[in-house]
Image (tube, rainbow, N blue to C red; front, side, top):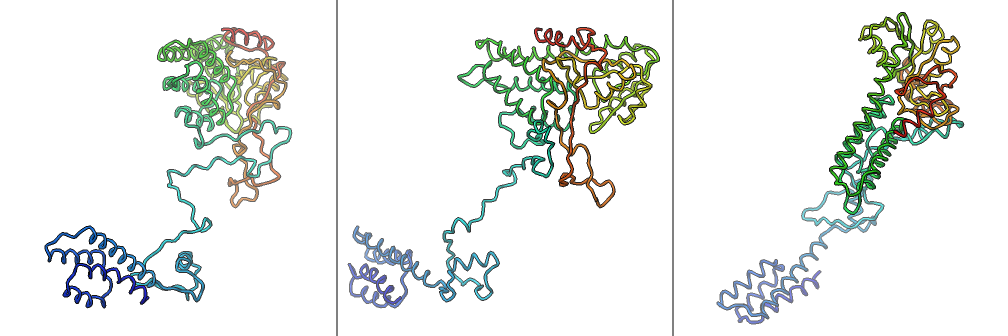
Length: 500
């Protein structure tokens, strides 16, 4: 340490000896015993000496002053480094001791309070000792819904082709191009807030109107080409929330065809207005007016004293029964319902509010209730090309029981629900809803009836099919906006509706 101080003080001596008289040299000899001055102190001393002589420092003197300042700063930093505790007996560096003390794993013998004036150094740490960056709450992504297969739910082997991606239950992970209205619609469909084939179809078309209104054609592209791709992004999100119904698929195909017929030279605002007007006309003609035509054709089949049996809830059946009641018909209604949705409750309440005599029954009592019925009115999710009815699960059982008792089964269905697909059973194509909607309960629960995580049971398989298929021989008549026809005439109506 003595040698370092002697070397660092040599430079200030040279500055003072050059250009000074004997009196300044004597004062320099007295200052040798003092510690090296700081940067500001040296500068002040030189400025004072220059001021005493009333002379401006030359360039050589300024250069020497800068060297002296640098040497003083270097000497001060070396003194601070030597003043730090050097614990070499334990083999631990100060930085290592500090990290051990923060983690709480440092021995008590090594823990000591920091010295006054000690310089805190933050040395570099290895990749293994660095902590991960903490994200703000707004930056943390919501966890994606875990597939049921990873939670212990087993799948039936013969229905493995029906199990797809689990339903989306949140907007986490949705693309940036998805419209906010589409995000809301997808969640409403997934949670059965919007349920029913007609309701889902109309809601989808109305939301697509908002998407078209907010759409702007990017530079270098045309509206007919790019808008179709933009709608495909919205459709993919809806499919991830819940599979499309037959009516939704027909409506989407019609909309894409309408977009493709637009001339690329048409101004954007005119093309968008034309598409929105076409959507309104489609809803009015294919859903609203078609439902009115079916109700007007079906309610005369209801006679005084009839007991009409229906299953679950259908908007067109509700409209037909309401129209018959407004026409002064005297009849009773039996609403048969089943889980897990229990849609028939809403139908029973709506008809009772109109003043009808309504009886609500579970499907378990069907064998007794159906004996009192005179006609069976059923709604449809879709009519297949081979004349079979694709509807809410349980419909086939109702039609079979009615056919066994020679009770006519009448299906009310709009042509937008007709498809050219052929189905022989409800296994090849169907929709599997989440198993937890069945409402299973945990075995050995703490309280009777307490709902728990039954999915942890390895020997329990939950199957929640949404639809079933009713053979054409169980159906007496299909009433559409084109008239009354047998199930075998479904392909003809499907071609007529497609051409128009």
